[in-house]
Image 1 (cartoon, rainbow, N blue to C red):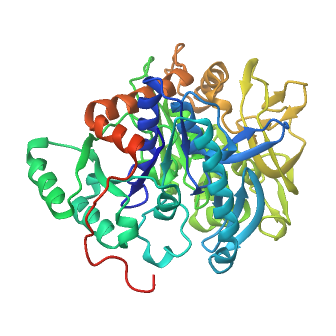
Image 2: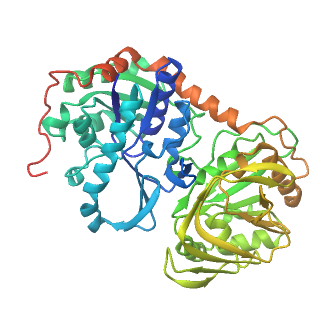
Image 3: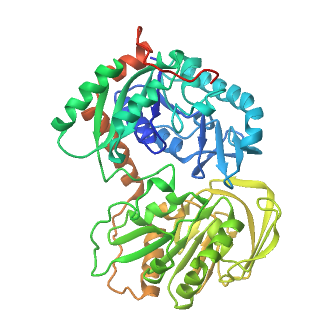
Length: 510
């Protein structure tokens, strides 16, 4: 075996979930398979602890795909991670470690180094695994970025990979997107595009069939399957924009009341996946919002992580959300800050690292002051909170000096972490609420503070089991709705010979 590139007509077309589904399908067949994304741009990341004991970062989606393969995450699965801190700059994480900050202007000079690292990581994985399923980024037909591409068709050419292109039919225009994607690639790139996959289809498949035949005739490339829209595919989204307004599909409450959770969708939201653990609980309705009015109706408000804490705090104040947060806390209702959100709740933030703004006032809802260290904390800690075992992961420059009455968590060695002051709490730990008993106790207390006395937390929710079921569901979708024989041939044999060129191809000079 060898590998496959899963490309997409757009961002959020479904590349990540299709890649995870193929990985899970192959893993269940007994294939030793690994995921790979040469370069990811996302503020949703996971921590990998290397053999040297030091932590590193990869995209959250690649950690999810690793789980689909039955593997622990590996820094080589996502050798280049770009974490946007503004509309014009991103932190560059290379093999897990932050090495630079780039803009669109100076990224071009760094790209050869990034490509070399990515190609070397893929070569190592190909030596260790039977198959490597690679995920592209954005669209392979960004003609203004084609020169030096090492993520999409540049990767396919370098490693002689066949590519399938995923399109989201729920957005409309999927056939135009398929044809346009292919027709704007040059001959050398088109020679690697072996077919298409339609994602998020709703309705009668017989009505779609003529379109499948026509796009096949127009491109001389088959549609390898049509994946149905599945409401249960929502865990571990690569980007918060992939979420709908309501997160997940909440089950009915075990008691007589719902618990309403509002998560502020910050402009530079980071690791929004923290909210998924709440959304997995029956009777807990979680929605992401930018509306101050939504906070007025919420029982629990969560301010999640941010890649740009100070500028996102400015945004909270400009939009009126900061006032809504303060009113919510002043009413005695529970308020939770996670990582950057925790920092916003403090008295002051002294940031000479990310924003360079020096000391700025926080919301003053927790008696904590924050500083920013040059070296980022990357760790997978464990400990306890509310009398229950807790594990999580840390990705932050910030450190806390706390006068809070008590910590929210404690490390295994007893050191305090986070803060609690009456109805306001915060922590730097991501993933802590995936610890089932800790989550139950926190939600029970939050419901009491919010006056939701009819809310009863479910005693049997197991977040890890729910995530495994979601991965199996992806594997089932691939097995049931894709032409798996054709996919397997592509992985084993590489790009089919004689794929025709569809004009006009990439413009000259690109």
